[in-house]
Image (cartoon, rainbow, N blue to C red):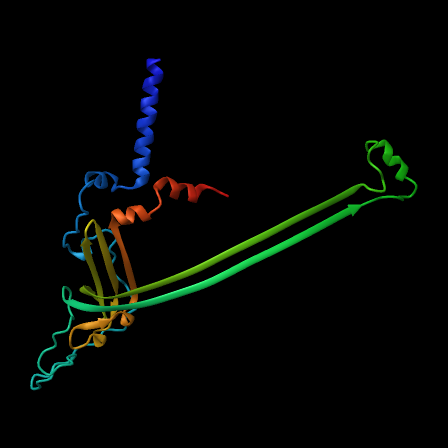
Length: 253
């Protein structure tokens, strides 16, 4: 009995560890923050974050900059005296985000199919009577094969989604490409009660598109990636449990 009891404890411990692993690496961290507000992320270098990758794009041939010692005009400058817009690694540029997305889809599918097959051999060069010696007594040569099949499919799907985001985010220039384009990355966190809302944006911008007030619109960003979400009590309540997510992935029906 003691051996069985020890085996049960070992199995229960292994199951608990498996659930913790499936829950992700932040399970212990979340357990340590029970009863506390979610912590904000500390300021750090964007290139040191997990998953950061330098951007590589097709570039034109480099052009040698020409200097004009006797001129007050500087090549590449849009202002007569000094250009205060973001142009180097570490500079800050303000991104104006205004996204309004609305999707309304309604799809219905209905399919029915009926098949009927029959085969008989009433006459076969006089040998049709010999079939009685091969097949059971219940089989008649006038009705050898008969089959029917029915199938039907009914599907009904609907999507009604409306998204709207209007905000401003300060992004940092993390890389200057060979053609002068800037790779920017910015993130913003706001904690309200026990919920942290996160907004991150990455992409490539042209220095010419940055206004004199050092701002740029979201639609002028190439390869733009905008992520908006949160973490906290409300997010946990709205997120399906790990077991349900695994069940939805593995259940075949």
